[in-house]
Structures are given as C-alpha cells and as structure tokens.
Amino acid sequence: KEATDYLEKFELGMAAQRVYDFIWNEYCDWYIEMVKPRLYGQDSADKDTARFVLIKVLKDMLKLLHPFMPFITEEIWSYLPNTSERLVKANWPKYLDEENFEEAETNIEFIMEAIRSIRNIRAEMNVLPSKKARAIFIPSKSEVKLFIESGAKYFATLANITEVKIVNDKVEIGEDTASSVIDGTEIYLPLADLIDFEKEIERLEKEKSRLEGELKRVKGKLNNEKFISKAPESVVNEEKEKLQKYQLMMEKVVERLEQMKEK
Image (cartoon, rainbow, N blue to C red; front, side, top):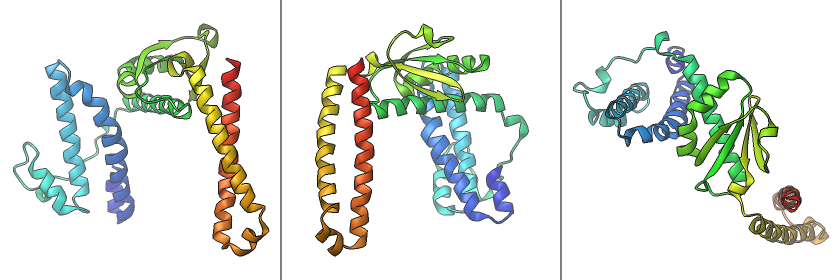
C-alpha cells in the first residue's frame, strides 16, 4: 500500500526504499527464518501453507520491484510456479483491508522485539548466540502473556531459549539475571545459563589491561605538543575520538567487573 501510494505521487525513491525495507528487513531477515521449522516439520498441511505464503509474497514483491528492476525480476519470475505469462503483464498487487491482521501483526512485532532484546543481552555480555539459556518474562498486561506463549517456538529457534517462564513479579525469579524491558514487559535471562563467572572476570581483567594500554598510548600522543602542532587536524581529531571511545569502553568494563565480583 505504501509503495503504491508513493509511486502514484511519483516519489520513486521513497517507493523503492519502502519495498527494499520490506524485502530485506521483514521477508528475508525475519519471515524466512521464522518459517523454516514449518518447512522442515512433519505437518504436510502446515508445510504447504508456509510454502504458499512464501511464494505468494515473493510474487507480490517481484511485481513491486519490476518498475525498478525489470530484467532481473522477469528472470526470477520465470522460475516460480504458475507464472505462464510474463511479469510485465501481471496484475499489480492490491491492498485489501481484510488481509490486514492487526492483532497478529502486533503479536509478531512483540515477538521480534523480544528476540532482539535477548540477542542484545547476549551481545552485551559477549555470550555466543549458540549458548542455550532460559527466559523469564513479567508481562505488562494479559494479552502480552498470550504473545509470549505463542512466541515460545520462535524464541527457541531464533534466540536459543530452551525454556520460557512467565511470572507475576521479580520475587518469583529468585536468581542473578541480566534483564531488558520492552513496552513495560520485563525479560530476564539467568546469568548461570550464560556465563562462567571466573572466566568472565578473567576476560574482563585482560580487556581492562588492554584498554589501559590504549588509553596510555592515546593520552601520550595528545599530551605531546609536537604531535598536536605538526599532525593534520583530522589525525588529531581521530585520536581524540579514540580517547573518548576507549574511556567509554573502560567505564563499561569496570562497571561489569564490579558486578561480576559482587556475585
């Protein structure tokens, strides 16, 4: 709908960007990954439904892309099932209100945001994506509980969550956790599932030593009057940026070390 609206107003750049965003960020990045378990599952009817939706959406995407990439889209189109006529003769996709499922969209957007939050927690703690963990949720409202329950299979396949637990408050969690909040819903990952405390402290101590060396080197340059006076301004600014970056990294490492040593 948005792409068609932009095209009708001759805003070609906006139309192309919207189609690109949908293909890359929603279809490729999320939908294909979410549907893989269904494609490889044992339920034949579910497999057929998943394939149908994948192909149907791919066909519509090719139609939307055709004004911008006519030759490539025609070639891809020729390999799809039930496409006897050329793409250039195909009907333009129409937006239908009855095919806009707002509740399902809200549900899946919550699941996607929860998966992003879990991945971010892992990244911040330098935990491999393959490391299995449990997830504990405190939903902000009753319908979110249903979203969480329906998203359990996606948390398993896309965030390596082995168990999803829903509780009413923090008292029921009862263990050291890393946490995140999305739209008032709290997500907790037990630290014992994610890290070896001794190894993490050792890694952080090494990182602290490395950063101390980098900070000493950069400060030495910036405190050297010859360097400041002779080096190009761009080089001096680059070193100043490095100083700010290393100082911020050091703050985070020290904070994390203090947290680890309190456990």
